[in-house]
Amino acid sequence: VRRITSLVTEREFLENYDATAFPAVAVAVDLVIATIADGALHILLTKRPDHPACGSWALPGSILQPDEDLDACARRTASRKAELDRLQFRQFETFGSPARDPRLRVVSVAYLALTTAPPFLRASSGDERLAATVRYNGDETSLIGATGQILRLPFDHDEIVQSAVRRLRIDLDRTVDVFGFLSDEFTLRDLQIVHEAVRGETVNKPAFRKRMLDSGRLEPVGRKDEGSAFRPAELYRLREGAR
Amino acid sequence: VRRITSLVTEREFLENYDATAFPAVAVAVDLVIATIADGALHILLTKRPDHPACGSWALPGSILQPDEDLDACARRTASRKAELDRLQFRQFETFGSPARDPRLRVVSVAYLALTTAPPFLRASSGDERLAATVRYNGDETSLIGATGQILRLPFDHDEIVQSAVRRLRIDLDRTVDVFGFLSDEFTLRDLQIVHEAVRGETVNKPAFRKRMLDSGRLEPVGRKDEGSAFRPAELYRLREGAR
DNA sequence: TGAATAGTGTCTTTCAGACAATATTCT
DNA sequence: AGAATATTGTCTGAAAGACACTATTCA
Image (cartoon, rainbow over all chains, first blue to last red; front, side, top):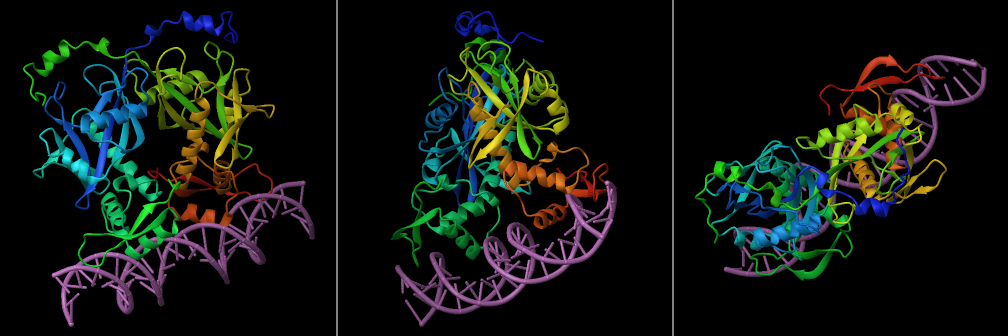
């Protein structure tokens, strides 16, 4: 039986504490930034400018800085590496296999970030960013590059993407917030396209509309969609406080 | 625009890599070990033998060792600190506020672990372990100690417990595996008690039975519960391969 | 035989899917 | 008017809750 109370006060203990006694580890944040375009889910990849895996497409990520929150690190990474702001972030899993990074032990906290398509696709227009399409094969997913080839990501990034998509689909069933894919005002058709892209299959229109409207999370803006040919659709927004 | 290809090979890069250049962080694993007893959810707490927060009830946790997997660290912690083995582990969230530990920056990967009541309660009989009861107040939860008082945990452990219970209840709705609370063979009544304890409210018996049996995840053992007064119940087990 | 729990049947409500009809806008 | 899309209505079937009933075991 160990002693419960110590002869040293907590203050004395902390003043004499040797912080270098712990094993050397780095904590990183990796981002799965997703959007819906052309009715399909896309993931943003950046070309690695340095070793290791120099030149391959990979998830954007950063090493956690001292005094930086995990969420703040995710925001910083999106801003610096993908030039995207005002995303909706969701931490979904932490990856820590001992050999996942060849440099040193890196434990990576993975975030899912949803965004609307336009800035995402602008960001992907350069040489160093790519909007890879998610293709479903049953429960498995693969990433498709610009020329239709299957992309294999370095480190364990394929596994991270797999987990992110699984999480996104589960959250969708539970109606966890998926409005990060849309602008502030959207039509029910837009929302349906998001659901269909995430699920990879069509959904029943009347049932979908009823379910969404009955959820009480939406409120009509009072205006109609502009600029479309044919009958314009009613615009909705997410109700205040309904997360 | 940064250079994409490097004049240095990846091998040369890794040989000259300075691993001490990263900020000093420790990674820990904290466990929320849960069981069902007397129809209520309980969480295992251990009394901290050292500073900081020496003498308070807290979640068992360990610093991640070099070459140790996160899951392995969770198993080791359960074995060493709670003397429990063969638990069902689920990583659910990672906590990394800069000031959550006064010693140094500690990023903690939190695991939920389910176990059957008997060894759990034996573990709590000593002075240094406690099975705290979870009490629900709407969406909030609090931990109740042996004398009925509300326990406040050090660090951000209250927040970790809160998140663990929320996750458990969500998983229950999606029928994610909750059989870690039960022994290999159990009655439908046992399973119903688990569901009621996690949800904090009674469930409809016929509907519950039908739903469970129709799920195809259970199979009858062919024997009946022994040792109970009155009519004995049919024993079931989780079907092979039905996770 | 009675007490206590295990297990089932039936009715009703709710909700989602299928299918089709109606409404609105622009060319 | 006609094309194309938005929105609504109706029917049907699946599943859950409420409630009450039957079945089995032991004292």
